[in-house]
Length: 120
Image 1 (cartoon, rainbow, N blue to C red):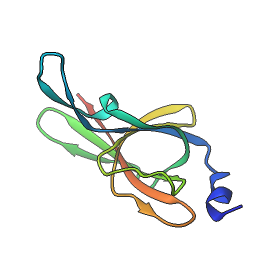
Image 2: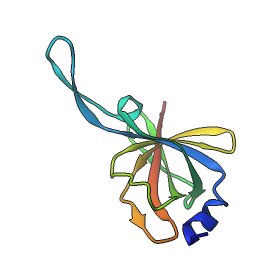
Image 3: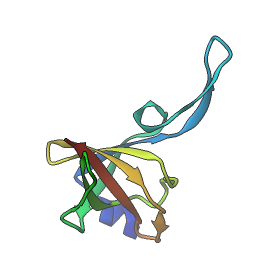
């Protein structure tokens, strides 16, 4: 059993990874699909979501923007690209996250991710 296999035994969350792509509509118009409309490249991958900040507020005249930073840990054979969208299921809750730059080790991959919500 490898280090990655042993560490994977501690992953209790699941993630789906969506990658932005360019598509052509039947009318011939090109569109760029992002977020959860992107191309699903991984489904039901075991992972661990860990919060390393409690969140930050930033205010403008109309909206309050609340951002929370997290880190995802998963098998190093999975390749997540910067700006991929990740749908993560953690402790019964669904999180939609934006990927940072993946850091890969022999035992696991670490990915900084950000959840962002706009509230009025």
